[in-house]
Amino acid sequence: MGPVLCLVSAVCFGALGIFGKLAFEAGVSPSALLLIRFGLAAVVMAAFLAIRRDRLTQRKIKTPGKLLAAALALGALGYAAQASLYFEALHRMDASLLSLVFYLYPLLVTVTAVALGRDRLTPAKVAALLAASAGVLLVLLGAGGVAIDPIGVILAFASAVTYTVYILCSDRVVRRMPPLLLTTLVLTGAATALAGKALLSGGVGLGFGATGWFWLGCIVIVSTVLPILAFFTGLRRTGPSAAAILSTFEPVVTTVLAAVLLHESLTITQLAGGLLVLSSVVILQTRRRNWSMRTHTASRQTLSSELV
Image 1: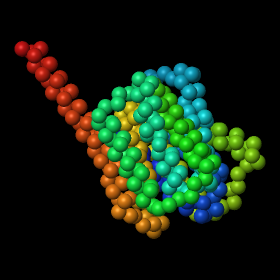
Image 2: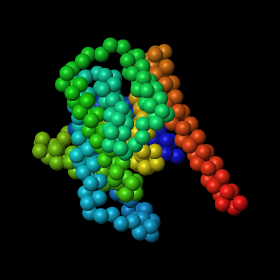
Image 3: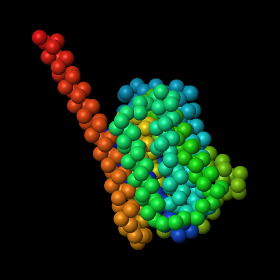
């Protein structure tokens, strides 16, 4: 289920750009979008956590104060910072080029995790990473030429680096904390940081209508609460590099949704890129299945030898 959950997360995050564009058309500003997105998501997760609290108590989960602080910091210093850098870059450059720069993060995550000794660079992961990266390039470059803003590129790369650190830090925390609790704390940390930023900058405008609130609701539930929870649960089962590679399915989803909902055309190059990204998922899934089968066979052989 780990890879499946990572794909669910990617699909939901892939809809974020579409919902965001529709929200902007309804009069929602980027600063208001970010604050409401994380604020309402934190409230939703806190309510859900309160409902499930009895089950967590029965499991006798102990969470040290330092771990709680680390989870809040992931949101305040990691997720909020990454989202802010991303939307600042979006104001300066074309969305396709922004995605192209931002989706360097799977490569950054994989290389950094291997360099830190926290993951192994297996042939399957190398093949999946190359296929996913090539697929993303085809999907994004297939849209045609784009204008380049140096500051925007720097902001986009900073967003990718921030998200890399966020994933690697999350990998350490998620193994010591239930995904539901971690998601709630991360969202709370992000909302608190963005609220502080809004107060210092003079607040955010909320003078938009019901349509804006509808798209914000879609952003909160479909593209924030669900994908973050799915990603943390999938990350716990797959590891950082595999989770990052599977997340490259996100720009493919964005491109397809843009074609369907915003009437943007898909080129043959983009379709070929989407197939390459899908092939990376198949590679990882096949590798995990073969590993599981070998482990199961080895266990049965060991049991048989012990019985003999």
